[in-house]
Image (cartoon, rainbow, N blue to C red; front, side, top):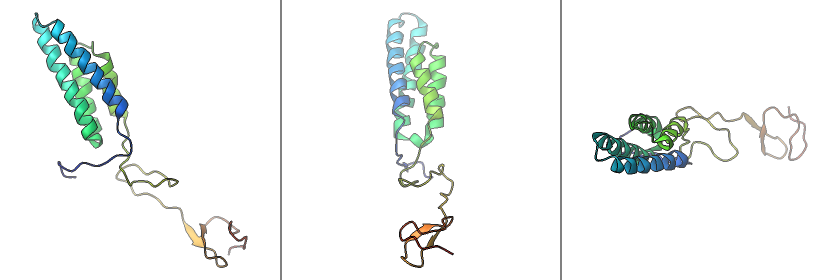
Length: 146
């Protein structure tokens, strides 16, 4: 995959995004409050990294593991006070992206990068419709299949 190519997914990781976003904003406020001591600067830096990770997660959902780790690590390094960001990082890590066009409605789902297995079918000799291989009678016309 090219670095500038973005894969569309069926559902974006919105819960992970919003949790990380809220955690990053809370961390920024804590950093501003604690700015008069050196630790406040670290809270601000960690919070900015959580916010960047959240934004990149929405832009590149197929890279959810990388951005989830960044969100998780900087939430922990931010003093652990960004608990909501920590939850957002965990949600990003467990997110399972399904690329658009991978599975059609009513068809079995195959994980990204694996072939989609099609059910084995045959054609009814009387009505010409496609039926599953394991049926003994055509569900459309009732003819017994060989």
